[in-house]
Length: 282
Ligand SMILES: [Zn+2]
Image (cartoon, rainbow, N blue to C red):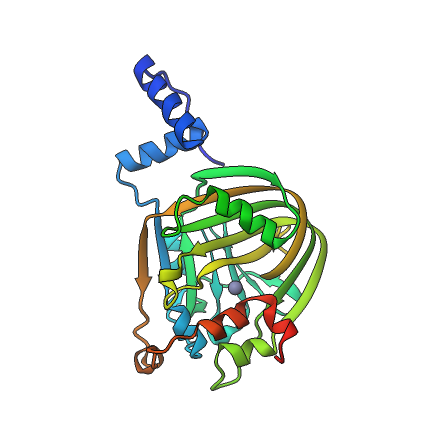
């Protein structure tokens, strides 16, 4: 349960809160939480990332941190598991692994993780809108994102009429991301209530993260999940969490240290992470 606060405050503080809420569009409780967190210098807007997207493209799939490490650095996020064996979704502080066909299991705290992005999520801005497709959803998030140069975490709750998902299956030794995701499990889900856990990353971050949008789905009953390729939905609640700091945990594994990460792997990354490979040869 989220703690509730009832307090008497001065007229001037109340007026300042109303003014700021009007200006920023944030509800008073959200605003209050943010202002108090800042006053106490709580680390609320750090994106904690493990490894880099380029390393993932290069097939650096060995565990660098554990699920427990992730949970110490956030309560919300996404990623993958060792050998690319499943999709990682963290929501409300609990970590899940979605495998072939979307089947969800609970990884142990010592499960190794080669790549992930987590944060302490609380909505800085939110909106409720009628959506159609993934493009409509991203357009709505675009409208409330403050800048092209800030990472944001995105939480989307509601009923989804259709979801096209995938779950990466364990890579063969020597495979890169593109080869490994060519034999991933893809499946459609119809009429499911749940949450999209997502991030938007700026173009300048592209050697490190997946630029643009990246969403993983988890059902309300936590039985079904995967990496989002496409969707159709009605009314959804959308919240974004603005990240002002980026902490990258660079794996000190032999595999990472020896990898050649000098190249630009945008094309391969885009192909592996979106639905576009469906119309391609892979
Ligand atoms: Zn993913």
